[in-house]
Amino acid sequence: MYIISHGNREDVTDIVAETAQAIKDMRVRGAGRIARAGASAMGAFAEGYKGVSIEQFRNDAGAAAKTILASRPTAVSLRNGVLYSVRGLDGASTLKEAVDSVVRDSAEFVESSSHAVERIAEVGAQTVRDGDVILTHCNSNAAVGVIKRANAEKKNIKVYATETRPWRQGLITSRELAEAGVDVTLIVDGAVRSVMGKVDRVFVGADTVASDGSLYNKVGTSQIALAANELGKEFSVCTETYKFSPLTLRGEPVIIEERGREEVASESDVPPSVKVFNPVFDRTPAKYISSYITENGIIHPGAVFGEMLRLFGTGRSKE
Ligand code: RI2
Image (tube, rainbow, N blue to C red; front, side):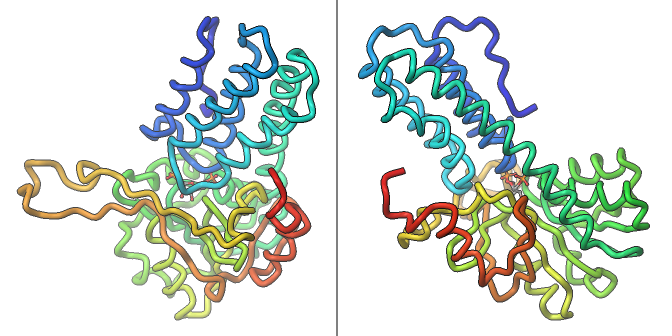
């Protein structure tokens, strides 16, 4: 479930704070899901708004957007979903118009983003050959969608799913695939290179795609890309285009989230003198990526820059 139940909440700021907290705690996770949750919280915020002036609404909506965006820093999908929801605020001339625009645009984002995931499944499944052995990492709704679709099309596939320490999202992936009748084998992260010889291709998701064609995704992705590259295996990224980052068009770096030590080792596992480094994502350079599978079709990493210009302009204009 990616949408927090807002029930009949009176206080719209609570809805926003609760959503931000759920994203931070990873009760809602996955780059697409957090984007939909963020957009949906903005819609609920607008729907329940009790203020009386448009200026105040603009300020309050800006503060709400900031709260949601502060929850997790890496996936640009969250930012794109929230900004899409408030894109009509500047052009509105009454409070009602402003509220209606946020309600409408947040719903539009949620719908179009779900539709994008379905379209990626169709596009990606067409690239899967009968008998392919696929490796996937973490739990990407988009990548799992492609695999499930290829399986439903009777492509006779086999899948290796990595455990994905420390949150073990690979358990979710292997459960989802097994429930869909896919032949799936769970492996520990360190076994990737041991199985790569048997793998035909890799499908992963994306948290952010940068304008140089590089990928920011779950930590470990870049090692998998290296292992795939070593043996000449295809490495494809299943991603909605709202994971493309307009910020990178103007040279802004992607911030890689670091989370707490307790996610890696408890106090009884190691003494406090042991330092723990827990980066959540890593960067895979464009040269290791065969293709981006998007709702708009298949894009070579070298063509990402052009696609971003088409989608966002130069990235310099006000968003
Ligand atoms: P979808 C996840 O992040 C993983 O990095 C995954 O590859 C990515 O989001 C994309 O997932 P986390 O929230 O949007 O588990 O394809 O840290 O579902």
